[in-house]
Amino acid sequence: MRHAFSLGLPFRAPLHPGSLFGHLAATAVPGVEEWRDGAYRRTLRLPGGPAVAALRPEPGRVGCRLLLADPRDLPAAAALCRRLLDLDADPAAVDGLLLRDGVLAPVVRAAPGRRVPGAVDGAELAVRTVLGQQVSTAAARTHAGRLADRYGEPVEDPEGGLTRLFPAPAALAALDPEHLALPRARRATLAALAAALAGGRLDLSPGADRRRARQQLADLPGVGPWTVETVAMRALGDPDAFLPGDLGVRQAAVRLGLPATPAALAARAEAWRPWRAYAVQYLWATGGHAATRLPGPAPDGAAPAARPAPEGRRARRGRGASAE
Image (cartoon, rainbow, N blue to C red):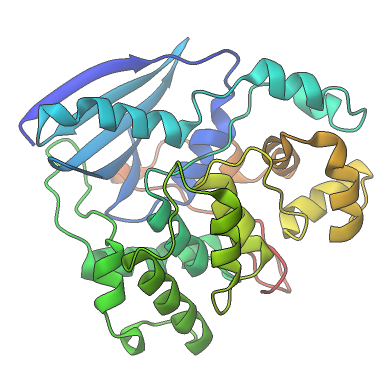
């Protein structure tokens, strides 16, 4: 990577960086992502070759340093970073609507401008979401890190500790699922997902038809509403995606005096349309998870330790969801 660029990514204020960068750091895949010296860093797959992006919250902007193989990839890399951090969101519109809700209003006023963590690659996000089904955040990171280490293309990172691109769908579709240290049902789900992505039957790109993508995901074995809505929220950028069955969302509902059953909570959340994905961020923020605040220093650029999953039914993303 011979070409380095430093730029500032603007956004519409306010922007609350805690849950945004906190989530990315807490779920960082070893070798692909890291939190180092106050910045979230990750590898990118671009037309001109692999790249590294380092993103740092700064007053009035997000500092962005890019290491590129081809300088012509600069616009594409900057666009991916903006999408990952949801920098084109309109917090005045989002928070303005959510502030009308008497229950959510105090949470929004306490820390306005929360964003929905996005994705630089929809296929990667979908694979990682499947790996995160019914396991702790730490376990999901371990599974994804093993995949990246074994099947991801190597990357040089002269400024940090990144080593791999996340495996492309074609590489995952070609592997033998029996070699994966996953439950048999999860292996079948991952294999079906990788085949659909590699064969072009499932489109999770930014311009994809969200309704069609949701249905195609739901048709895969082992994929339920939590996985579908998580992918819709983060990969497809649907601002109205909602996770009424997520354990963390249900626990937040109990804390706030909202209905706790998925059906009743979904009915109550009709008032939050078309910004229910942002309502999820505010609900999660009430739990005090490490993923909802800026991480502290981590040794050698490693991602900070994730919070253990709740007891009982194991948790997804450290917050948890119903079984699929």
